[in-house]
Length: 108
Image (cartoon, rainbow, N blue to C red):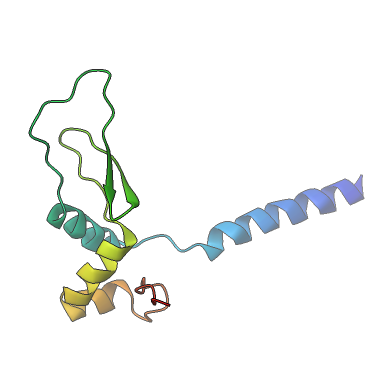
């Protein structure tokens, strides 16, 4: 019975460490992402039918499904470009160590 408790404790500890390793986005990061999404808003000329799905792509990257009144998130490339032009103080506030800041893909 003790062996089972040790295994269960190890499983719980491993799960909690996995969640702790992935940092949650702070409010400043969420605000920057929302501003990027607003800057790259998508509009369609025609109304959507009831059974129609509209998936939006930007340079081959899926941004998501378009629905009225809902902003689509930016692609990583769009977000990196937005961060490069955003206020440096806000970017440093969102990513103080720059460790989690998205970087542009290097071309080969």
